[in-house]
Length: 115
Length: 114
Image (cartoon, rainbow over all chains, first blue to last red):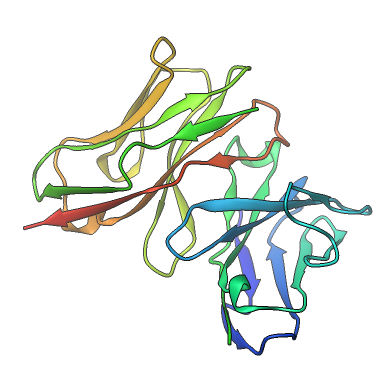
């Protein structure tokens, strides 16, 4: 399995500001993903974080709003930019790698509230 | 494209009763299928997975699921519900490539009553 540490675990932010969420994995992994879980909703994939290149964004998500970095195979960051109350959600980091099996592993999530 | 549909956003059972959470998938390629559980204020934990081996899959905490290709279903069951089973349950699908993303269903909130 993989142990994933996300920081911060929660935050309350002012609208118009930005927050960067960190995801650290205890082993090198091929795939890292960022999901959003809005209140009472399921998980929606924001993007796939690619090591050494630009992230691959899903429909409805753009780099200017959710810039992602992945400098190596164990670390990634997601920034939520120019936040509005609609960005209040849980943001989850997920990893997947053949050496870990077929399933994806998830961090504990970052609970973001924008006021 | 792949998708999953979970019927019933809320399911309520009595303690000791059968738990049945429904999941139907749509996939143009042989899928991998997963059930995850999310307890309040926590991340997702894998319950069980289907990866083209046995069609009846056993997972943690007494849960199991059966892959039925003819019905495109992967329903989650547990013979006897426990209070600690109260949580949100998500069905997910992916392709069989290791890098494929998971697509999640809308989730089912399970409530267990005395």
